[in-house]
Length: 511
Image (cartoon, rainbow, N blue to C red; front, side, top):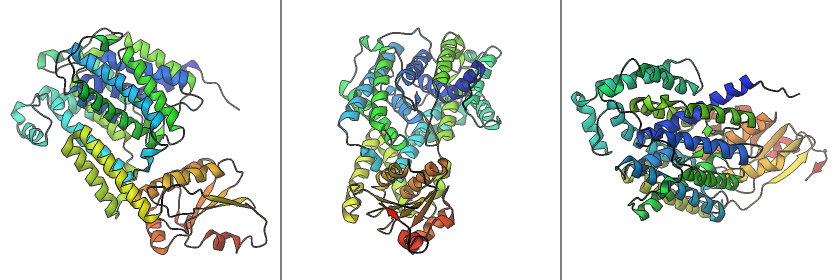
């Protein structure tokens, strides 16, 4: 029996979800030297597209950390007047939407989902370190000559040149975010509110702490005349679109084409209304699924915030700390324990991060993805692990046996396990036996997708048993202590030996 939520509950849930959306958007706009109105316009367009086009299982569109980092890196090339930066940001948003629509039509299904998980984590690590390099001068209140590691080191050791009011305010914001006893990100919104109140007591402008620029909303800002480097704009927008496409493949494996197209259309609408780049919102590898009433409440709250001018008084050091906090919250730290003893996976992670750091976010991203796809093809051909064979399912009494026809490798694990889940998703069974007698390559990508499959089945009150493992893989999987997979759920026996011969030797088999 479903219960109706009161309007107060709608606004409460809308305020909580707004804590995931608004702080990052404001931080990215302020640090890139853009008006905060662009961030608010982008969020409102994203919510409107989610409300009208999100479907029954809604996704939340928002400026995510990595795609917003790309916007910041792109704006760094255009350190001109504010009006010119606004036009460049709108052009980047428009081109990004066009690239995403094109990618949703021409790229193969689940193309980038074949990339190994350590490579994806390496990309995230490299971008996070790059973002820290870009944000530290903002926190210290100094003007950075460049974003190189040598320049960062020179800024750190020159402590006499720091803007100490900026450092104190950033430290205060960090302490509030860490010590605030709440597991949800809306506390970032409360920090913004407290800093706004503090701005009337402590005049930030008098102590040299800059605040985000504030301008009126402009429709079609990309129509303003701007002398831009068009090839560079096309390359930067294609890089942002590729990163958003990667996020879609990693976190929205089902119906990802439709979701990529939705993000592309939303970016085009955002560019026309004067917003900034938006992407997919997720928390700890889970897409935000929200109701229509919650979206309406978020839109009303955004309209109220838009009419309230206090956002213009939030200084940049606070926004920089909030950006770092949001990124750290969105990192799934539990996955990092899977790398213990996985030296080859650690090598892929480090190589990916080093390429991003050495060659920059834009060029490094293309190098890492190209290299990862080449390695994936080589492994797939060498081990005959190309994801073209379908798993077989047998129903024995009230239990299901899934037989994987080929070795489980990082190149095909996502496709094989997703197809296996679709085969038994609607069946009224409680136990599923996954037979890997063909072989299983023990790496972080396999660990991650096995956990994901076990979690999805656990939510349906079903239990997954993994059998047919060789002795070495069996010991590794038990040592990893995977979520929703205890030691009793692994076996070296095949499904036939474990189940059919011993329990149901005379039972009927329905193939």
